[in-house]
Amino acid sequence: MKRLVVAAVVGAAVLLVPAAPAVAKADPVKALKARFATGKGVKVSNLTKVSTGGEVWATLREVGSVGFGRSGVAATDIQDKAQYSKAFLDALPEAEREELQATLGLTRTISTSKYAYISGARVKNYLPEGKTWVRRFSGAPVPGSLLVNPFEPRTLDKIIDRAGSRQGSVLKGWISSSSLAKISPSFRASFGSGKTSDGKASKVNYTVWLDARGLVKRVYATMTMHIVDTPLTYATDGRVSGWGGKVVISAPPAGEVIDEGQLADGALDDPSPVELGF
Image (tube, rainbow, N blue to C red; front, side, top):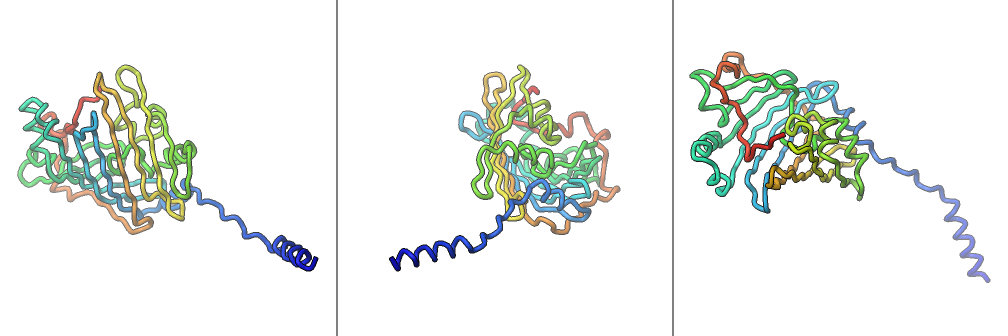
């Protein structure tokens, strides 16, 4: 009987102890917008692979900085280096292969809301003496070649909302390429409507890792599109660090810049493993 009484008292005491307040999960979109401030930004490191039939055709590595303004990304400074498989290069006509190989090496791109400035391997053979940068019109600064851009509030909001699973700070989900194209300017700039020439959309699978503040620290995404009879798989892996750090990105000295229109036609055509036909 005494044991029953003691047990009852202990049980009541437990019930009377106030429960710890629930900790609300940070809102990733609010966390992102709160970081938008002039002179602040992040560091990025991206890896993009394009493959078919399990064989990687092209690899692109990118590192650099993303600078914010009061309403979003204001400028980016990205260095990239592309590599192509021997099988892919051997399949190209000789002239195209030589042209592509001439662009291999480190390329740096500084982009703002109006212009992109390009220097390095991709343009070096077209530059006149005394010029090291090519300027071209740019719709918006893009932080690399990621399928899912974690710095676009609408895009981030949509992929968080569509996440089918959430384990701690890791979210997984998918979105159609056509739906992503409607909300993501950077995806639309690369893939147009998100549909192939025969009107088919693809599935974009993604995984997002958040830190304790709700800020994105990594985003991985894949997409397979069928171009004619060739399935092409894009896999992008982006890592973000240094949230809130000082980032100042400036245009190159005017005397070192030449406008794209002053170069030979096709000088800035982006080398690509395939003609996507969007």
